[in-house]
Image 1 (cartoon, protein in one colour):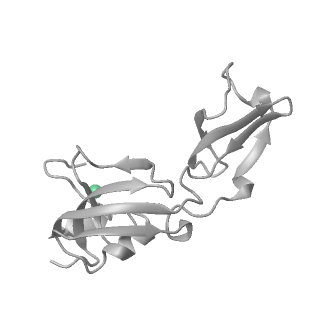
Image 2 (cartoon, protein in one colour):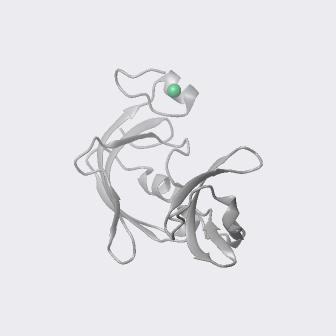
Amino acid sequence: MIIDNKAVVSIHYTLTDDQGTQIDSSAGQEPLAYLHGAGNIIPGLENALTGKSEGDSLQVVVQPEEGYGLVTDALIQTVPREAFEADDITPGMQFQAQDDQGHVQQIVVREVSDEGVTIDGNHPLAGKVLYFDIEITEVREATPEELDHGHVHHEGHSH
Ligand code: ZN
């Protein structure tokens, strides 16, 4: 079966950055299964997989625009130290924050100074060129229920 919308695709992947440093990998775990055409994965990867089939291997370079987006300066801001309950705030710490609309957002502490704490709400991979090594392990047709929900239902798992 050729990968197109309405296919459930299982892949093994290794993701590295432009320095060759591994960021993520499915090695040693179950393959990642996703519903093609439903926006489950980043557009650059989804586009590259269209038309491929089970058993194919491919290398994909994804630009930020087709990945996790560009870095948005507006998401980097300095807030008063008192905004944090924790006593010990250090660069690299991660928090969950909620915006006005109630969306949960992951933020990272970039800098701590006398002026306050600089936090960054950009996705950790925003602005990065991503290098994927992909092996397609399975392609099957999605069930009507999966299409309805817009995601994959794993065997023996319902919700
Ligand atoms: Zn579902």
